[in-house]
Every structure is written in structure tokens, then in C-alpha cells.
Length: 78
Image 1: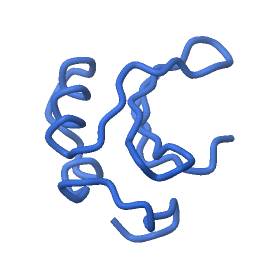
Image 2: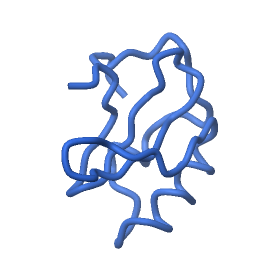
Image 3: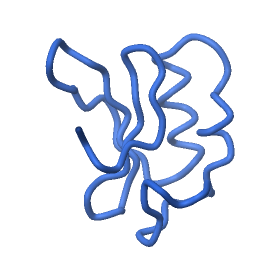
Image 4: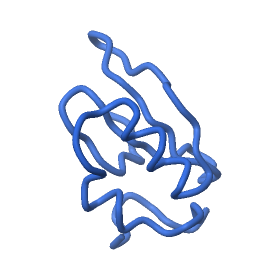
């Protein structure tokens, strides 16, 4: 399991890249995850997520900061 999962919904998820420089929108494809979009800003993440998944931006993604922070880890409060 990937250590930097930010949010999962159905067959989509958002992870923080290992270097903490961007959020990655991914979709499950069987046993692996396929990268769909790379986002360094909240507005980019919002646009990419809502263009791929029905419904409004989920609360855990809506409250992320305007820009990704390298210091943030999976267990940090968002």
C-alpha cells in the first residue's frame, strides 16, 4: 500500500508524491493505480478531480491548502 494516500473514493484516489511536490489523481486499473493528473495547487486538484469523478469535491480534498507542502505527511491533520 502506498504510504502517502490523501483520499480515496471508489476507484479514484489522491496521493501525495514521494517528494511532497504534488498531488496525484489516480484511478484503479485492476491491481495497479494509473496516474491521471499531477497538481501542485488546490485549484488544479479541484479541476482535475471534478472532471473525472461525479459530484462535488469531497470535504477532505476541499480543505487541503492552496499549495502542497513538502512537510505534510499521511498522518498529519489536514
